[in-house]
Image 1 (tube, one colour):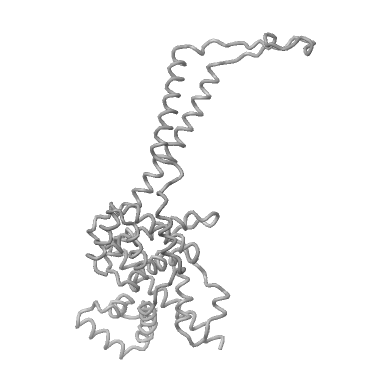
Image 2 (cartoon, rainbow over the protein chains, first blue to last red; image 1 turned 135 degrees about the vertical axis):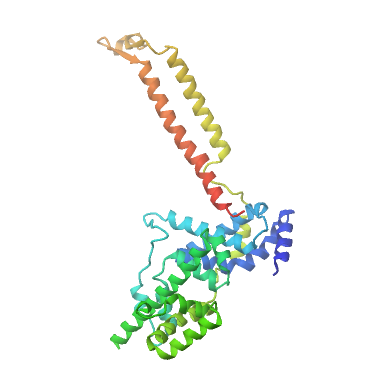
Length: 185
Length: 174
């Protein structure tokens, strides 16, 4: 779907045809859900946040200025909504920048020894949610650094450093896991 | 790990991203042949790079779109409507203003005594005279004003400032 086709759908919605919005939801629901999941690490909560983001985007659609892609605008709403959900979690408030998820012992024990993807997946859980979100935007949707900066509200240079640092940490963690596994063989 | 080498992870990551110029690329490739540690580090970084490149998006539940479309029918509401909040805030401030004016004009300066014996209660229930209670109107009105000011701050925060900041954050990109 080209940006022009998206703008045509937006025009239809704004002209009083809300059912046209389903096309946009269908197009972006997987990515919106994936991004929310990177922040929240909880499928039901991520689904709720992603739905909430689509509803917010719908109600503010008239304010979308079309200078950026609809996806860029939508993903920023997804990011803010997911972060907001994260902060509202009762009793588990953590700074979004400082949160680190430790390796799940069950997941770790289930790792298949010769499957590097499983190791990397485990290593991914050691990153904070902002890093996982940024990496997902960079790789999954191949957003430019400038677009990621617009979505996350960071400087483009900061985004670049964050992506580099996240990959370094993943490589360090992968090496550590592989070394640990080698020692237990 | 790569800090011990003459080449940084940043160079290796830029190599993987394809953002190096031909000369820098050539230098890295020569180093990879000469130094096994650099090659091992690149291998670890490439594993991450390839994994992320081949990752796929997760799928939400099958009725995701249907649920979003159902939710569109309901207007976006927050706990407090800003308009109602402003009206409530105005009411509280007017009440505080009136109380302050009355206080300043000395209406509550005198202490009133509440004589319980003047209450219309059948004499058969009372054997003794009831005590008189001194009521300090000025103190009570001051307390009411304080409570109203606290209420005004809460209403200002919940109904005006919080929705405004949330809305500004959501629409910051518009």
